[in-house]
Length: 112
Ligand SMILES: Nc1ncnc2c1ncn2[C@@H]1O[C@H](COP(=O)(O)OP(=O)(O)OP(=O)(O)O)[C@@H](O)[C@H]1O
Ligand SMILES: [Mg+2]
Image 1: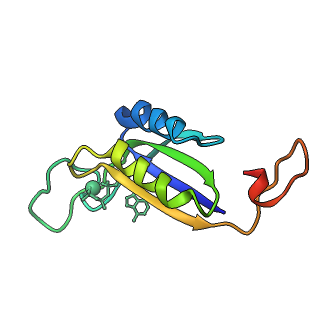
Image 2: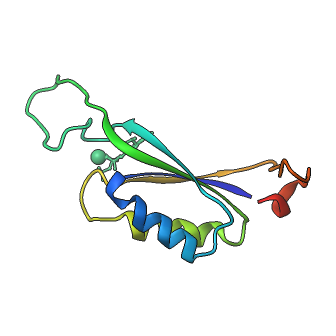
């Protein structure tokens, strides 16, 4: 089981959500985020070593996935979030020890 976390542009949220639904995900968590990457939150890179870091608004998506579906979902997310420009975001995979479905107590892949 994996936790897929994606930090994407807010304006790509609808496309990402629709693509994930079409791919058959069992669930999705969405939250507001703010952050910076290599451009330090700036649209343009300024001269000089020191300048303030800005936090740009982003959206965080979290999806639990089984081993067999996780790689494909990463591809789906990347395709939906990509505009071809810096700041498009990042997707990472985290291997999970366990998942619990609270209503039933079910554990493991079946709980995803
Ligand atoms: N190394 C990182 N650790 C944690 N969060 C990150 C990291 N890099 C990027 N993020 C998150 O992703 C958001 C978008 O990052 P961004 O797409 O600008 O990454 P980048 O490495 O600068 O790539 P690019 O050059 O394509 O912009 C950031 O605002 C931040 O929330
Ligand atoms: Mg960047």
